[in-house]
Image 1 (cartoon, one colour):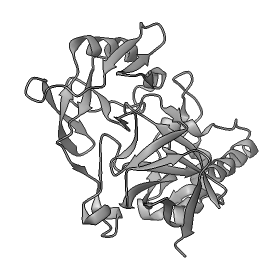
Image 2 (tube, helix red, strand yellow; image 1 turned 90 degrees about the horizontal axis):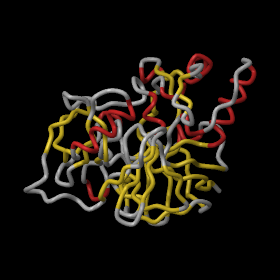
Image 3 (cartoon, rainbow, N blue to C red; image 1 turned 45 degrees about the horizontal axis):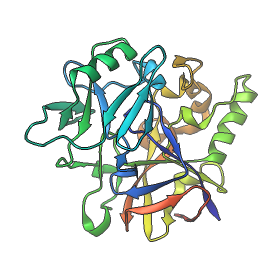
Length: 289
């Protein structure tokens, strides 16, 4: 029986994650204490999103959820607290921001927050928050006509393209075996930044899963996750190192993605939703062949 080995929530896109013992699995991704996965995002002066691809120091911005605030810490910085309550929709400043090919409205956080992030990352930037009235639908190219629950198009917040990323712990073991054979150090799972880590399945079986069943909620993998240079970034130091993708290229390149190197599967909720999930619980898991 497959088990849920780890739950990781990333409140701010491309910043550090929070390991949780339990969370709520929603149509828009994970949620804990009313904080959603990738609910916030850092943007440049043109409103375009920033990530660890170009700014690896973002890994050192560490969030934690308090009673009424999201607390942020970074090396050499005083802590910053962001109110969790949504701003007044008629009074809050808004920005049009860009995440990949999508342009969406977002709340603009204040100038103090912008200064804090600019100093922490080392470039002028601002923090924005996903607007609750916005629906950012996932690409239907990979869902094979599969929508979310009740035929509603699956949606996400500021994640790259899909609300949940899953990865198998055996898959990481397999990659690490090959890295060691090449004289390289093994990597922790945080280099690949999944939301859900699945145990007690074979290496890369998540690639071929028909579904994952969490109680009354069904999570359907729809697209392999093509990898960028972020797995080369040490999440504890914010310093890039050897890129594991060169070793992975020999057996993780996916022809259906033009040879992109893949690890993990993007997934959407296709039945149920708003399900409480807990580390260690059994998961219904069925291969598609």
